[in-house]
Image 1 (cartoon, one colour):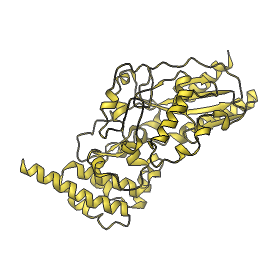
Image 2 (cartoon, helix red, strand yellow; image 1 turned 45 degrees about the horizontal axis):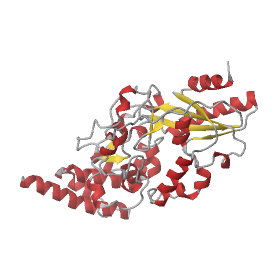
Image 3 (cartoon, helix red, strand yellow; image 1 turned 30 degrees about the horizontal axis):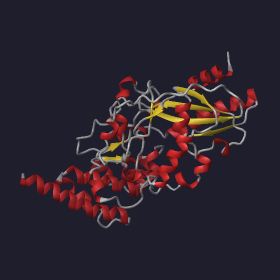
Image 4 (cartoon, helix red, strand yellow; image 1 turned 90 degrees about the vertical axis):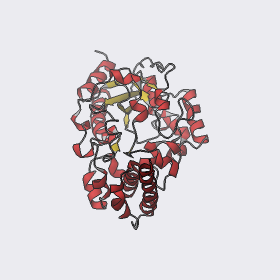
Length: 350
């Protein structure tokens, strides 16, 4: 059995669903796309994306003796669709990836097992990355044959649709690369049309400044009023463009227990979430990527969803935050009161 097959079998035995191999080079088109992304300020406040563009485009800057990159994918396909609570004004929508345990922790532990095995049995130098370094993981996954970057800029797999977590092992071993995956989007643009905030200035380009995932997770301040009005009941992340992809018809729900959604994070009640203080927030989201966002940004998102519901019953819950110690929360609460009043008055006048 070849080393390549042994690695593939080892990774599958540890729970990885997709395994591909590629060299340590990055294509010129990928580097150009990154440069355009930064030049247009599409990265918004995510300065780390612009901080080391030379390193992000050159894997050898992260490991000078890397000869091969093992790209790993874990299926987190949902059994319960992302849009199931879209029209439920009492519940908030949390991105599929954040409903279970933090994938960074799970994948890194398994990758280290592979790394220790390669180091011990094959005298390999290794480095492992799970969204923690300037690695252009989606282009690498495409070159490793795992999927392709769709028009929404996310990875699409013929086998798993939109639902793959990605990670990489850099190794000093010289392993034959796999054939790259072709782009199978064709003329389809369903993902682009699905975005509530028009975050796609062109196919294969995303402007984070308008993206609900960025706004609810990374953006630290007040959100533009027009964008808040179009956020619906998204309170952490957004899967609208991922869910719209026709290739999802081939996906299968994940069988990984660590990625199963926690009941309390699947369509949680907005009123209950709005009452969370810092301690309660930390307790509820222990072991979840949501915890890193912090209570203030999360409550901001919940207030927006409550306002967009048009349910007058939320007025008192929103008013409780008008004097919040967080300026972001207090200012959002003021906007939410006006937004809710406008929707309620409009409904009454019809």
